[in-house]
Image (cartoon, rainbow, N blue to C red; front, side, top):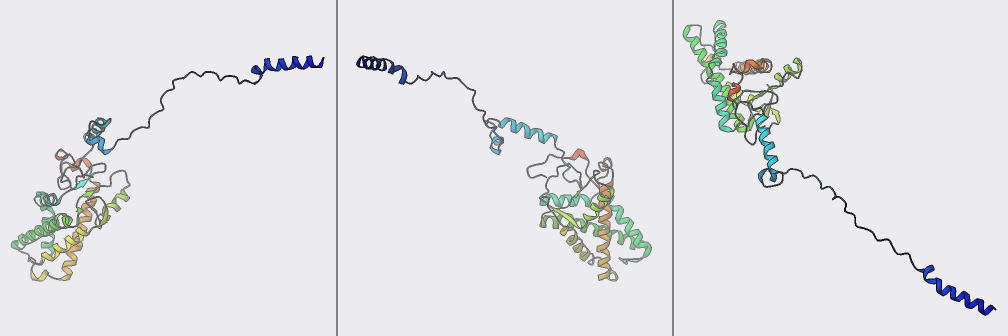
Amino acid sequence: MQSVFRVVCLAWVVVSSPFLFCETPAPVRTKIDLPDAPQPARTSTASDAQNPKNGNGIGVLQGAASARTTAIYAPLYARTIFPGETARRLDVREKFIYSARQMVEPINLLPALLSSGWSQYQNSDPRYGTDVDAFGQRVGAAILREDSDRLFTDAAFPALLHEDPRYYRLGESSTNVRRTEYALDQVFLSRTDDGRVIPNYSGFLGRGVAVALSFLYYPAASRSGGVALREFGTSLGGLAAFDILREFVPRDVFSHLTIFREPDSLAVPAEPGSR
C-alpha cells in the first residue's frame, strides 16, 4: 500500500513540476515615443554679428541697427555732454579743432572786453596805462591770454595726456546743491579718453604755461610772481563760474548759444570706440 502511495506522489511531482518552478515570462513592452529633451538656449556671440549666415546672426545685426538708430549722440564738438548722450572720442586732430572753434567764436570777445575795461578803470595789471592805446593793448593781451588757455588746456595737453576736455553735465536728476558741488569739482577733476576720472592735469598745466607765456607780451611792470599767481587764480575762478553756467543753463538754451554747445542739428553718428 505504501509503495502504491509513493508511486502516485512521484507521478504528481513529475507532472506538476513545470508549472511550479518555471518563471513567468516578462510582459512584452511596447516602445513609446517620448518628446525630445529641450535644447539649451543659444546665446548670441560676436561671431554671429559678423557672420549673418549663423542661426541668429540676422537678429543680432537687426538689434545692433536698432540700437544705433535709437541712441542719442552729442554733437562732435559739443563743449557740454548731457546725461544719456553718447560722446564720440576725440582724436588728436579733433581736439585741436575743438579748441580752435572756441577761439573764433565772436561771443568769446565779451570776457576779454569786460576784463580789459575793468583793468583800464583801475589801472591794474597788465599796466599799459590809461589812454586809448592802452585799452587796445589790454584787449589784445586778454584775447591772447584766453586763446593760450584754450590751446593748452583743451588741445595740446589733452592730446598729450589723453584727456577729454569736455564738460559732462550731471543733470536735473540731482539736487541743486549736488550739481553746484559737481561743477566746482570739475575745476580739479578731468576725464581720460576712456572715461576714467583723474586730476585735471591738462587744466592746471595748460593755465600755468599760458601764464608763463603772458610775460612775453605783458609790460615789465606786470612781470612778477604775484601777477602770475593772480592771473592763475583768476583763470581758475573763471572756469568755475563757466562750469556752473554749463550745469544750470536750461537745455533748450544750449542749442542757441554755441559758447556752451553746438546745435543738436550738427550731431553726428558715433563710431566704434564711442562712449
